[in-house]
Image (cartoon, rainbow, N blue to C red; front, side, top):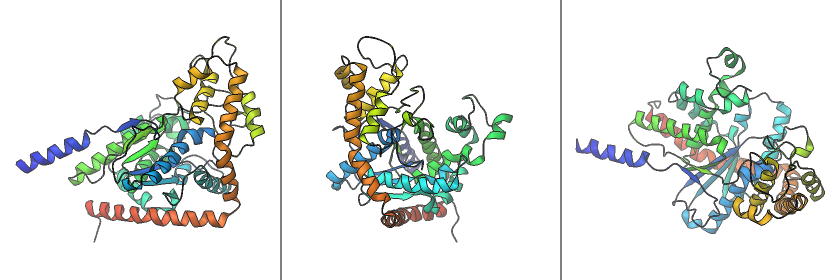
Length: 381
């Protein structure tokens, strides 16, 4: 009876820890416990644009910087190209091959040191796919049905249900179940923290639910419930249509800025960016002034400042002055990533070597996890 009470107390303390943290990793108050493991991935859509950079990759770079400055924390960083996830929607497979390499080069070009971080292609870690199957056996269909990403990717309404005839015809099993694969990414590498954007936070809640279900089934807390680190930068929006997020697939070249853009092209695109006809002080109002709010968001991210402080700084500027200021800040921010990206893409043998090194390091962790999980669920000889 006493032992049961102690185990119950441990589980309550373990499962009641706060799991979501919204903070800049550069904030002096941001701290990670010793031996933390941070894992995050990004889809292989090719060369990164500003939305990729400020929404995810800049925080990865900041984590690299923090770990390099304080190696005593022994924090492990793993970042990957989520190429298995890309197969959940139709692909041009030859283009995908090219975009995988461009995404891998972009991760490193944006300041992620392959000596400090383990950087790899998701598909080169077969243990992730193997664990994915096991985790599907601990995942409720109802929980997956409530996920929003499969609905948006299949162009369905938020109220869509997997049992609807329209949904059944449009949604492939891989798209419906890919949050479980995301959980496998995280749990295979034993992540304690996962930096994501707001649109992925729902999937981290599912990951914790799956981990808790597995732990209860095997009788102990094998998987730690990974915490979500929400990056403070909001979504970077389309420069021509700020009602939509910036996307590589948008056919209008003026709608997006790649990390490889020339200074001249960056200035041109910001000068043509959509704002509004409202006169007077510039204000941050994503609903009524999405174009202005987007420019302020970008400026804040480029200067590592809060939106509030940035808004106060630019409120008396003209719209042209704001656009020019944003362009100058982005040009400075992307100068080094652009240079490194071109160097890396000119040396594919070196990229392949970095990829192989990352795979070897990731598989060492993944193999151990899978072996332990297989033993826990009775699948060892």
